[in-house]
Amino acid sequence: MKFIKRLIIFILFLVVVVLGLGIFAINRIKTEITESDLPQDVYESSGDFTALIRTKVLAIILADEEDSYTLMEEFINLLIIDIIRENVNSEYDPLNGETEESQYIINHEQFQLDYIYAHLNEDNQIIVTVSIKRETLPKAMTAFHFIFDVEYERSTFNLVLTLNQVYLHNIEVRRSIYDYFVSLADKDQIEAFVDTGTLDLEEYTYTINFRDLIR
Image 1 (cartoon, rainbow, N blue to C red):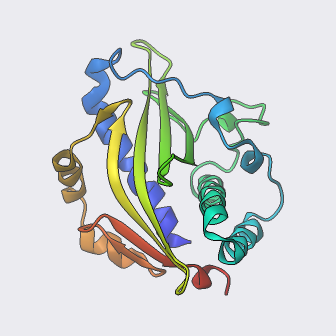
Image 2 (tube, rainbow, N blue to C red; image 1 turned 60 degrees about the vertical axis):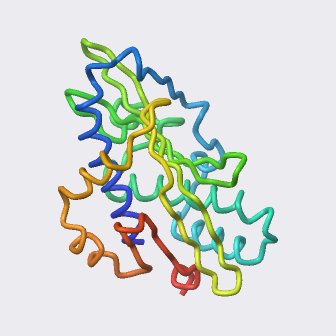
């Protein structure tokens, strides 16, 4: 699962940096994301998430084309919550948790990152939404939306995600700005970390073979 871990870590890095540029326009970028926006079934899931993920992959392989996109949405949301709990905050449980720690992915003194989730749009693109709040003055709330084109090659079991657009609230983050932040990282090193599938930061794609996840 290292490829998804790296993707989430990279998104978190990008979000934090770009948020610093956007803080001056608090009112313009205001977006309110609540618990009701989360994929309820996924967040109510219990048990071994690795087993749940493998089960979902098998369901995608066996599904027809129309159903496979919905299953991919659930698959990605399972990966997101599993990665958060395994790598960022083991107590994270915004629907059922009772502690302050359970309500946030990251609870920094300057900002709170509370939700990351994926959903399908009408074009069968995957949109990964990242919700950020600042609860001290100046108060703010906004969200980033990362839009990925999805291509599933049924004959080879390859899933290809291609980053299409990035939005802060409803303001598109230009590709040149995105490229600038990517250039701050060592792209070759990031790609080398991915030992499952193929991450290509130049082409904005990630390719994974489902068979690698169920072995």
